[in-house]
Length: 88
Length: 227
Image (cartoon, rainbow over all chains, first blue to last red; front, side, top):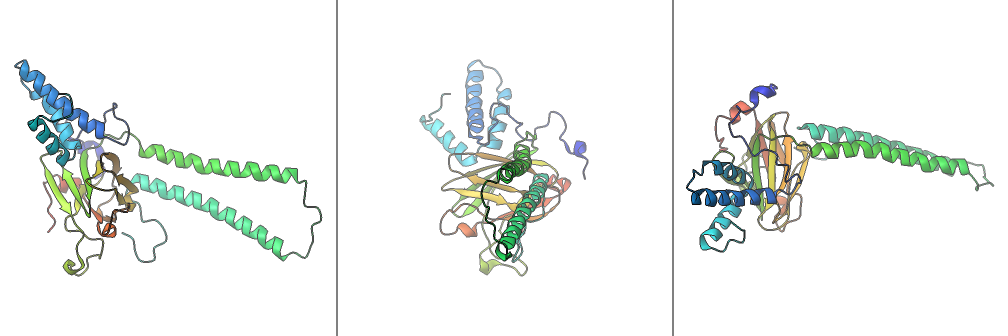
């Protein structure tokens, strides 16, 4: 029960977003928003260059884990309608 | 959970809460000693037959009762700051759960693997089964594993709320437009209760929080549904 090492996930397997030293404080809203932006910027750049978008999945998993889904849905709706305020 | 006429803190279910209880005992002992000393001095002053005609110019006493309280305050502040920084330690969580406050219920999102999103409403009195706790039990509990560092992201969809579970030493405000992070590690399995801790309207007292902590191996078997 108390064997901590046995309970850690195998290396390379995703568990949850790690600590990000860029956002050390209690309010993680910037962490969530930055990863959302980074995901879409990564998608846009790599699609433009004709490369695989698989590396962008990291940003997707981070913002998916951190951001409330209602926020994500509303941002996606805004992107679809061309009224998203962030720079992608 | 709290019991009727409870005066003290609930038993700890996380290492931070254990530290907080120890600190509370330490600070309370200092308070009791000072109160007892003052009451004793007051008692002596009120019950003596002697009259003191020289009640000025007591420099030594003045120095002592200035320096000594300063030292006592430092003795209280140092453990307090130690616990404060301990709660902010970087502890590499294994699981992230989002808790979103609404008027007047909580939404929980488990989105590390896939998407499990559900609402947690208080059980109305008519829906209580025998043995259920009035104003505390909910329809869907938050099921979590023990002995794993868990990160809670707390926010609100409308007004201020506060997500509190006393036995884990947690109370974090749910503020619209802000995503507050708090982390904890539970040390023992069980069902733990908390209540919304920021006034949020008519049913502020009727949106409790219930955590069901289970062994990690059972948690890993898949989504656990409460019936």
